[in-house]
Length: 124
Image (cartoon, rainbow, N blue to C red; front, side):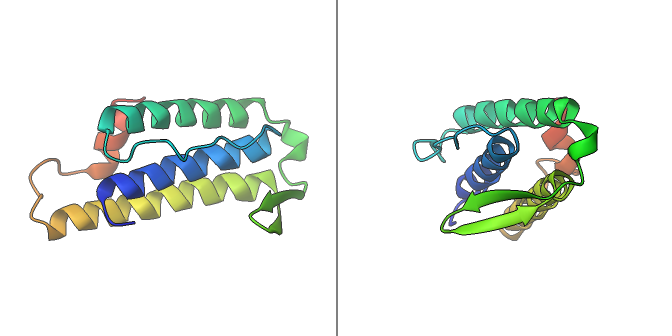
């Protein structure tokens, strides 16, 4: 990952695929998602966020702590849906922190003061 767009694309793509796994859907192919088109990236991100919300709202509460097997590359990941959702949130937060750091290190400090709020204000 060399650019902010690369990191944003990775965040949204990974989140989408985790939701696909929890929802027993085929994994979304994000290979053609452009990392240099902010509108397309965040449109995909909004859909990914909507899918995550729907997954959390509709997932049977009695199954939150039941381990599930998910294929990831050539391995099997066993985790509860609760842990998968927690991982999605942590994964995203870490990458948004990386993005904020990249921007600060490149002198982009005045665009916004609170990256987290700026990120969620448009979608929520």
